[in-house]
Image (cartoon, rainbow, N blue to C red; front, side):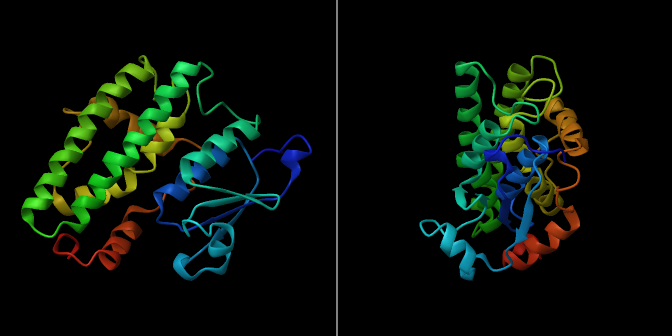
Length: 234
């Protein structure tokens, strides 16, 4: 990672996180894109972490970015902060106000619909609930395929030539998606049904800002087995 310019940017940067979290992954990718040197602090027990309770007393959640001694909370909020604070890498959000609004809209959609559907498959109480969550997740992928075609304008990423705000928001969910694919046998990102997303995912994984911090899928599988005590992960 490159140097940080400016007195404000010379302040110490720390990140409180946990390796399986897709929301922590967003922050790490954004920091890597901007070539920001930072200290990563793994929080194994976030519910009882004194640091988490101290820096995020409202939600008591990670990620928490600490710049100097100032905490910034919530993953999308952190990514926007990183983009506005450091100019040492490519822009994450578009410069055009309308395009910025579109990018923010889709990342909120990803959290409110895609992530909740992923979680819904994992915690479903019965087969009917699981099928409904899988169907909704399939609808999310179809809609994001259309969004990719529109936003990328024929280029490699939602953000165009480089990773942008939607790429980070959705790309952080690829690990959990692959875990679900392994256990359900359903391919949510498929070369026939979602060709744009299929090739985008390969480019995203291979990106220099992503590859070093993307969690290993087999480790995520084992984590899911321990966390979700449901038949899908047996």
